[in-house]
Image 1 (cartoon, helix red, strand yellow):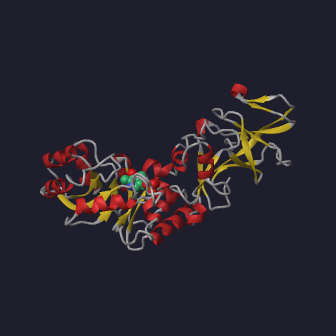
Image 2 (cartoon, helix red, strand yellow):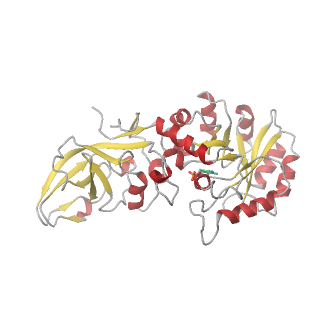
Length: 368
Ligand SMILES: *Cc1c(COP(=O)(O)O)cnc(C)c1O
């Protein structure tokens, strides 16, 4: 029998969340972002869950090629672009769109004989200060790219630093849109600005923010980009991580639990040992009190998370026994809550799901 730890992927929730993203920006086409192994859900499952998307966007060229081999015929976009001139032939061969964010990439394109045209997304740095040309340098970069014979469509692209918050004190979406418009003024091409946060604010920003293509990631996986909870935004969880209680210990006051003996029982209590640890992707730094569901009852993590196991407080879960079902996150326990308790974000938990965790597929409510 396999270890009881299992991640159940809800393809129906992925479809639901994609429809939710579309409804936020009904005039835009959707790049479903499937980087990082579809945020830990599996690239091929991402392709199936988001079959209705207009395109798939990711970071890894080898996975872009794999999507073609798996039969994806709609557009594919490399969000970080290519890294070497030898990558360009693969872009042409497999008809993969690429972001272009640096003068070095433009030079590589100028020196490469493209035997088939490619589409590119010219990235503007509107304040994130990660990738892209400044608004001042953007028109010249555009002109240089336009002059390359093998370049077909040029989409104008930028990325928001604070899309989860409309009124960020340092840099607002509106300010980034203003800079984008300034740099892109008069340039032809479709526009692509919004990640999940931007998509979720599309209604409020409909006067300022125009997207021909949106690029939602986390919202498609039922995670909130920040601000409101996923449930309040109408998103459904797409990954439920479940396991079982594999051991029970009865503590008397003064007993301690786990490595470092960090948890000390003050009263007699029962502790459940759950088959899931940091080698499975559960964050080691999750503190006492991190929520966890045992037998349908919400309780708390206690003691230090170890490599393969963790310990939970079974006070208040009187029927718990070896074999009781445990939910680490997902259906019935929002991943964002677990992440917040561990000082991180749902993105990181999903992406960190370890290779050794068994994965299956099932509808919400049928996991485990
Ligand atoms: C990852 C990524 C996205 C998706 O971001 P979410 O916050 O997950 O919606 C969009 N655009 C680019 C360029 C990205 O790298």
